[in-house]
Length: 202
Image (cartoon, rainbow, N blue to C red; front, side, top):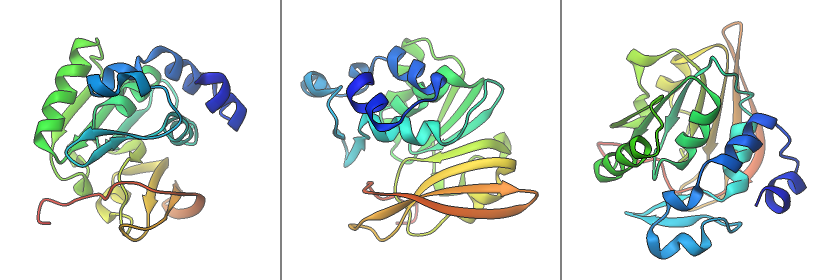
């Protein structure tokens, strides 16, 4: 996985590569999918949700330019795999999952695997986690039709956000958003497909 999927496609950040080596991806997929855990494609984790392909996880992690002291917000916990990757790199990860059953399972899984620097809650990720912010980095692992304003407000000055934005059931653009001296700058970096970011009132 590391050599063929990541190094061959310009994933070079040492912290990202180290995390991808260490985190046991097979622990974050259903038992019947474990044989395919390290394959170069997303996998279903049930309840209409997926675990992203390894390359996308690594790319989104690398582009945030994470440092050990960073506080990171993840929107869309899913199985907890992306949170575990982040938890290998930074001091504190806060992750929000709208599907309560997934949040519960991910919390227990991460705890069992020894990730004591990751806090999981069930809630509307569109709203972020205001009382834990501001954040040095925000990663959204579900596709939004627009950039959630509450998340922009929780992005620390100098912070970076990566989020897929575009129409549901279509191709989205992975946007890198930076907060430089209070000015928000947006750059499209890749065309992607993601499951939709859902809301509590949907």
